[in-house]
Image 1 (cartoon, helix red, strand yellow):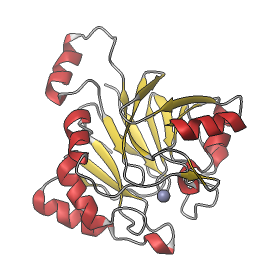
Image 2 (cartoon, rainbow, N blue to C red):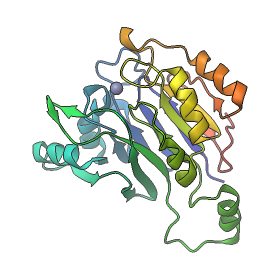
Image 3 (cartoon, rainbow, N blue to C red):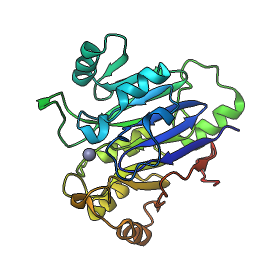
Image 4 (cartoon, protein in one colour):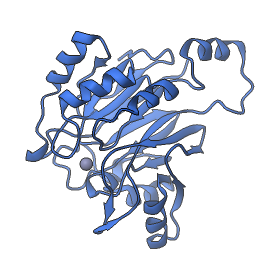
Length: 257
Ligand SMILES: [Zn+2]
């Protein structure tokens, strides 16, 4: 049985180890809550949801240090590739996917904005990340798992990026069936906990980790509000992640540590 290890590094930055190592939105330099520096990140894949500096962060440096491949929205990908000709970019757009070292990163809608050096660089996105089984011969164990889970993969993660709540989150829940969702709750620039509770009802993932809060004065928030609201309607189990502490999930989607 393979496990998935997930660690929050403050704001919207997570490292994910599915055998292949992934980092999402690596804003570390300048992030007062970050527990690691960019040179400590080990990654095969760097995922960036949009161009704002608190998400793009140290992505280019981490790619260079690790010879990692960058996955982001097409307009931002092209800009970064122009500035860094050696960068290996996957320039996807909404509903598109990139598969790298057995991991599939799919782009989904986010309702927000995206700029880089003061210029608009396409829409922002959320991402769904999971191991990719398409093209493999399904053995009986795997088929049994797929039947139970109802989707083509093992443990699956939805990182919403920066977003407001929107009705098509229901579609993300229906189609991608994430086991774990990472949702912003800081308010001001994104959903607050009350909007995130509405999102949880539509996405229906087993676990939800709140993010993008308590980094700066404008995004102060209480994850307990989301935990209370979702406990009432049983839409998800909120995990209030501790920065730097690894969370481990097995392939049935259960948190084991
Ligand atoms: Zn942000």
